[in-house]
Length: 120
Image 1 (cartoon, rainbow, N blue to C red):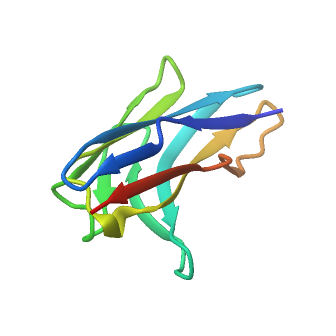
Image 2: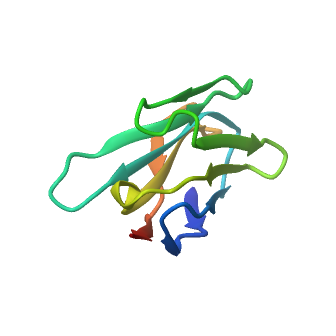
């Protein structure tokens, strides 16, 4: 059984910073691309950042220059450093990972989500 567990969400004032973490556990052969999505009330889910197993990153225009994603392959963790936060960043943040199992399958797993609220 594979699990992704996020942590680090919370309430912060505009201009502040938060760091989200996501840890993968279970029967894992390897982890491919890991990504962060967010969904605000009444809005579509948006992918904000991704990072390949080799460390190549990609960001949405809405967070470029403010958010940084990184990963620790040995710890099976991915991080999202969020700086200069804006009220528009308020959302539930989810991490995802393409995880190869020992059976040969490589599905995408989702975490349970963590709330980030930015007050003005």
